[in-house]
Image (cartoon, rainbow, N blue to C red; front, side, top):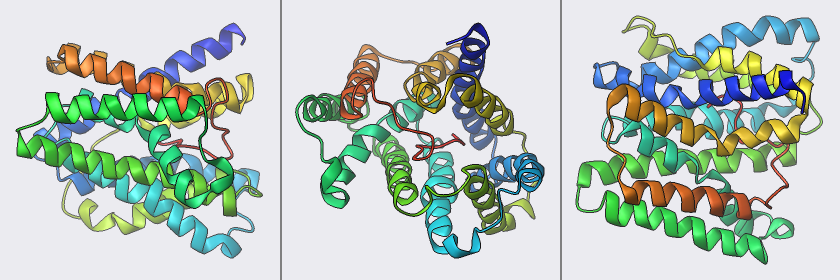
Length: 284
């Protein structure tokens, strides 16, 4: 990759690792989780809508309304709320580590929904390793604390939505300009979560800036290399959580993170990252 691509990669990884910190600060400060989610998607929609209109990316979406609605629920509206609720009970660093299980959950969903993509060989080994990391986190690091188990469970359910979204995209939305469905999903999610915004003032989130940088990164380095930030974001989030919020990350948490990242890498096919047209999320 070029020097500019590496700079964009670093910026995007840092910016997408930071939202967990802002979510934690917001919910600990009494901001309702539903509003935190609305603020993120509304700002993203406001940023992307002019770009999508200028590019004509919103044309032809009506025929895909059902798939876009399903994508909105799985990728944006429900996960954003669940993660915000979950962070009322767990550290931002733990939330980021749990979200890193997305490739593992995608591989598990493939066993049921996409037989052609069922993991074999090293991908199965990756599943076992990654799930071992989850067990280490929940069984040892969180075990015995019901509130934290609840928070972790909510984040894992949110991540299941992230894992289901690429399957929706790959089956129904690959013939569209990605900017169109993403913008439409942001608008739809913002409308669905609007009631929260009527009760509380806005809270700024870094998501829109990350979107701009990510699009530039894709143009500079290609979709495959850009998608590798999936494996960097949780590391950034852990570092930020420790430095800014003084969160404690024990040896078991670090071991769980390493196992999850290694398992996710193998389960996702090693050097074959997810393509942007079948994305994990461009909004995390």
